[in-house]
Image (cartoon, rainbow, N blue to C red; front, top):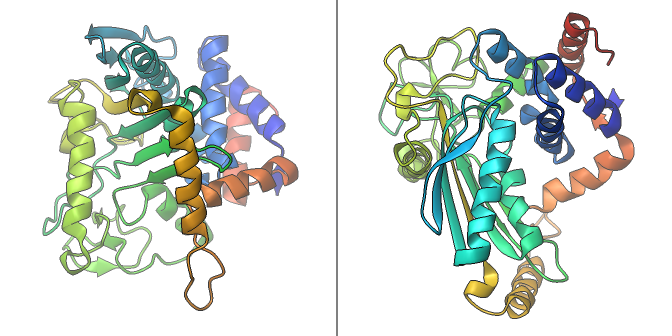
Length: 356
């Protein structure tokens, strides 16, 4: 069944208000959450709403955080999220990065004491309206085994880079540093489907296609799947995200990152505060005139779009194309939700007396 953006937005905002979020923060959180559904990243949209509520019920989310800068230079800052929703903390931090870039040319912000911040791409894209390049990354629940390891030491640790263009749509890369994000396993489980080979290993470190492999003690695999296909590179990328997001800010890193699921308790001996993020904003005109750059980006994008294709494929995609096309369709036709997600939302509605 499809639901309109307006309908899901009103429902989500009411739920955020019910857990104690101020009006403005409830609106921000709703906008970030629904942007995932609009862009086709269904694993990070309203399907996650009940997860945030469970974290709040467990006392692990502060609905009224005092988000603030704890340390800064003209071009850098550390932001303390005060245990707030990452959906609210991240926009605050990205705004700080953008304001610093306006003055210094570039702005870099590392965040501690936060929670899951939704999809990485929407935060990086905030820089586009200022003729800036945006960067967004976050560490996450430790579900990933480094190459050759049986232990889960890293998260899916996504990276997003948004680059403005002129007449062409912007270049927006948004990717997990694993072969697949954990949310995709949740979707496969709901659909009762198997995972592709190379996504997961079981508790003994052997390949498995069971979507419940991680729940059964296994681990997600770094981008590449195994050493022969470059998993050491995915491992390195995930490690970079972890260090920039947490070691740099004072958040928890590696296996100490608090799990998103509320039924698992955070490590009783943390090495930092909450979850960590990292954001960057770079003024294009700090390097060259913005119009010249955007004209060259148009040329870059056009040339790649015109590339000769292999049999069975009619075009080469630019990062951001699939999400933009899905958003156009879903704004018109509504957002499709799996029956299990609808049931989950209806249960939330009953809990808070909010009608879906």
